[in-house]
Amino acid sequence: MLEDKNISSYSRSSNCFEKPHAQEDILEQKRTELEDMFTVSADMLKTITQDFIQSLKDGLEKKDQTVPMFPAFVFGWPTGKETGHYLSLDLGGTNLRVCLVDLKGDGKFDITQSKFRLTDEQKHQDGKDLFDFCAKCVKDFVNKHFGSSSSIKDPISLGFTFSYPMVQEKIDHGKLVRWTKGFDNPNTEGKDCAEMLRASLKRFDVPVHLTSIINDTTGTLIASNYVSSDSKIACIFGTGCNAAYMEHVSNIPKLKGFDIPEDTDMAINCEYGAFGSYGSPVLEPVRTKYDEYIDSHSNKPSEQMYEKMISGMYLGEIFRLILCDLVDDGVLFLGQNTYKIEKPFVFDTAFLSLIESDPTDELLTVMGLFSYFFNLDTEIKERLFFRRVAQLIGLRSARLSACGISAIALKMGYDKEGCHVGCDGSLYSKYPGFADRLHEALVDIIGEGGRKIHSRQAEDGSGAGSAVIAAMTKARKEAGHIAHR
Ligand code: BGC
Image (cartoon, rainbow, N blue to C red; front, side, top):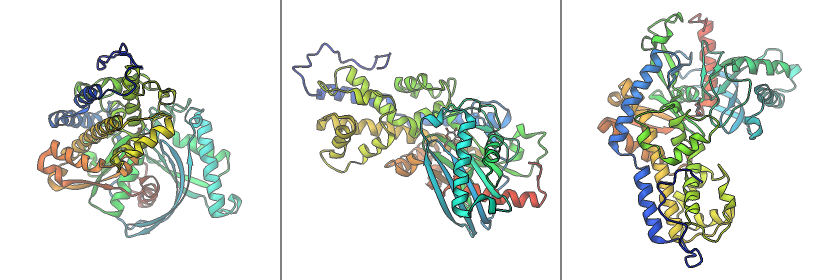
C-alpha cells in the first residue's frame, strides 16, 4: 500500500497457514512503533507554536504568505443587540445549508434550515453548475418559507458562508484562492465567488440580495461573541480546520492603501490549515509516512499540510492506511478478503470516535463495525490495538490543534487576560475527549496561562454568524462608516 515500508519489519515469509491469528508480539511491536511516530512532545508543540506565531505575523505583513491571514471586512464585535430576519447560504465541506435566521437581540436567535448532502460529483463539477445548484436550493427554500418568488417585492438579504480560502477587498466580494477539502470544481479558482453566486441567483430569478460573503470561522467568531462577549477566537475542527480572531487594523500592514482607519478592529480569517504547506522544518519531524502518503495522493499535494494532519477529512484515512500497511505485511486479517477496507477514504473519522468510545470490555462495537462495514472478523487483541491506534491519531490531532490556538492567544496576550474559544465542527463536537486533550496541550504549550484559554461549543457560525454580520454590515453602511468596504 505504502511505497516506503521502513516501519514494517514483519515479513510475509511467515507461514500464514500456521498462524491464522494476528501475532500478539508483532502487534505489540507495531504499537510501540506507532506510539513513537504519533506522539508529539510538549517541546515539539512549543517549537511548532513559535513558528506558527511568526507565520501569523508574516501573513498580516504581506500578501501571498503560507498562512494568508485574510482580512474579512467585518469591523469589530457585534453589540449583541442586532435584530432582524436574514437568509444565509452555507457551502461547507460536506453539506449545503440554507437557513432563515431570526435575530432576536440580547444574544438570542432562532434558525430554520434545509440541509443537503453534497455528492462527490458536485465537488468536481464546473463551478457554474455548483453555484447554480446553490441558487436552486435557495429558490426552493424561499418558495417554501416566503411563498412564491413572484409575490416578493423587496429582495431578501442573503449572507453567503463560503468556507474556502478567499481573498477579500470588501464584505461582498471574495476571490477563491484555491479549493480545499477535496473540492476541485474547474473555472472557480481566481474568480469572485460572490459574483458567481449572484449570477446563478439571477439566472434562477431568486428574489434575494447577496450582502456578504464570509468564512465559517468568521461567522463562528461573530456568532459566539454575539452570544457571549468573552469569546475572542473561533475555530472549526470539522472536515477542514481553521481559525478567526479580531485584529487591530494598525497590526495589519498589508491593509495600507485600503483607506481604513488605523484605530478600527477587523476580523481575520487566518486560513491556518495551510500552516506548514510546501515544507516546514517544525512540522516535518512530526509528519509520518502516512501523512506523506495522504498528501502526495491528494488532489492538492503540498497544500493544507497542517489541516491534513488534524482535520476530520483525514484522520480515518490515516487509520485505514496503517491497517492496510499491516495487511500488506501479513499481520492483520490473515486469510480474509480485505478488499472493502482497501478503498481510499472508506474509513470515516466517525469510526475512530466509535472505536475510542466503545464502552464494552470485549470492544463489541469495534467488532460490529469491522464485521458490518468491512466484512472482517477481528480478535480482541486486534481490537485493543485498533483502539490504541485511534487514540494516537485523535490525540495527535487535538495536540497539534492546540498550536494554532496558542499562537493566536500568545500573539494577542489572551494567555494573560483569558478568553473563550468558540469551536465547531464534527471533530470538536463529536470526537470523544477532543476538548480535554486540547486543553491539556494548551497548558503544555503555554503553561499556567493555558488554563485561561478555554474552548467551548460555538454557536452556529455559518447560519447565525452570517446573519449577525449581515446586520452589522447594514448598520455600518447606513451609518456611512467605512461604507466603501
Ligand atoms: C478551509 C477554510 C475553512 C475550514 C473549515 C478549510 O479547508 O480552507 O476556509 O474555514 O476548512 O471549514
